[in-house]
Image (cartoon, rainbow over all chains, first blue to last red; front, side, top):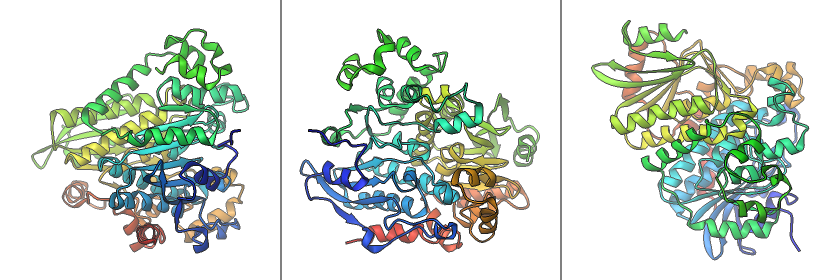
Length: 287
Length: 233
């Protein structure tokens, strides 16, 4: 009996992911902290501005957690939403939890408060890197229906460890935006198979962009999150040089098709990858 | 402003900054101190290649010239909107650039951003917005997207957005709005070399943008919410 991570709300994910009953929320909905910008647009607000934050225990260890709600404005980062994330990260510097977990589900900057969202995402990045510099690992979990895009796709790749399900997506621009800009020949956003093999969990795992690939199951995310509690990777010159070399080597690949990229990585029968289950994909080995 | 004009006004005719495609790079002398200049021009889209080219210069500056200041000259239309770049992990490459700049700051390099022409969304987050401070020329333009596109995506009437943008800086493009919200520290007026001198001497090394946004009235809640999280029982 499994519970789909994708089908859960942000709060359901939190409740099932951390130790039972251990989540203590900061600025809960009862405080009715809402975006100051949406009412002028005639749009409904949410009493948590689309993100729940707080402390909990995970496997008995204290962690600070945030979960973005994809059902509210696609998990978009607005002024208050972003400030809650920054506040959580700043509090981690003081409280020194074992790790910070971000259950990311977001289209990125919330366009309805675009400028404030853009600045907020950059504040999240700087605050996240402060937490890493303090030796506290940041773990990002991606498996919601809205994926993890735009500014949150950048934030995810600033973390120590990324966990994804095979139906999770991690990217910068959404396929619709790329199609609108360069045409359906460039990226057919309605071709679901193409979208998933370009941005989905299996591809990101095979290239090393996510560290753990799991099934769409909250229990699997919990197990992966517990295993990642010791995932701190100090950001050093050597680490960034290694990262740079790995990314630069990617440019040797000539093309835009995932199957060809996997084949170039030496994966036999690369065309079969989309049909494989998670266990079979992880058996292929990353990179 | 054209980058050549800017470079000449800042560092003189023999400034030593060269253009390679959309990339600008060079080592300049400013007040008898060497400074690394990294930039883009022609409203460059930032793809995997251009993000890595900039990151390489940051890494080399840290390795060969510990402590040397870095000036980021920003003119970008945002991230490259191509399937190949997404496939290759453009978000990881851009995050890498941001993390290189962030480590440089932590190792004592002053890193300043200057929006001299145009700055958009993803291309801006991992350059000027992750520097110690980001300034702009008054005629520069900064935005996430234009109002017509924002109207289309948000399904709100453009006339409503245009009206609201008069009173609320979060909606509308414009460098003054970014100053009001604290995202841009200040606009460079008058002599540009003097402005750079001031920026190198006085730009903060900690992130004060939320406090600036509150003090300037353009982003009233961010700093307060951050503090509420710190104080929450």
